[in-house]
Amino acid sequence: MGPIRLRGVRKAYEDGRRRHEVLAGVDLDVAAGELVALLGPSGAGKSTLLNVIAGIDSADSGTVEVAGRELGALGERERTLLRRRSIGFVFQFFNLVPTLTVLENVLLPLELTRGRGHGAAARAEALALLDRVGLPERGDSLPEELSGGEQQRVAIARAVAHHPLLVLADEPTGNLDSVTGERVLDLLTTLAAERGTTMLIATHAPEIVARAHRVVTLRDGVIAHAADGDRGTGGGTGSDAAP
Ligand code: ADP
Image (tube, rainbow, N blue to C red; front, side, top):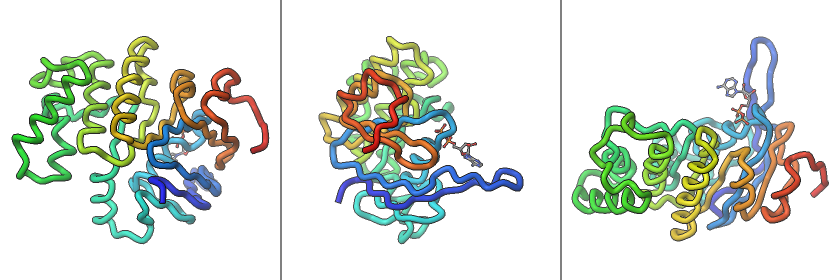
């Protein structure tokens, strides 16, 4: 019972009169503590797949299990609770709440999963995390006062604050220069490794591919090719080798 188990997952969008099947029978297992890079050209359905795993979007058919629970068998409320408790997100454009301070942003998942009764402890944890991501003095700042790289470091602290089983990241370095992206990636993978957090990262970045335990590629709506991260670093996505 891994953190993620997908079988025959299909998802189509109506595009005018045409039906566009973005996910056409995706099978995927991700084991506990695994770091998996999800590759595929733009428009291949990587974001759609992450959203289906998060229960934000629903599959048309097939089964999606997260933390051993089948999402299709859960009600909306249960799905929301499972998502809050078990998943952390990192987005390309950081997605911090602009009207909340940095500290309040990091506190959000803690408050959502634990309620209000843990104020002082949650605050101490959030401050410790801001320290870990190199922003000990920025708790009272607003997101707009931070650089892109700093905002993404806050987003990483927020993603792991409630010790989720699983972190889903959608192009987390896509909007950062390569040096900043490397730093952010270091933090994300270090924090995840320390906590045994499972990670699925949609990306084009070779640095992420190089660090991944496993690389999977979404092409024509299915997982086309799986290879070890070490073997996948040099070749790009041109290989059509059969599994
Ligand atoms: P990727 O993340 O790999 O770039 P996406 O999952 O964002 O791919 O998109 C895959 C395809 O699904 C694209 O053709 C996109 O236009 C389409 N798509 C995604 N979300 C929607 C939606 N809500 N409505 C209609 N089409 C969508």
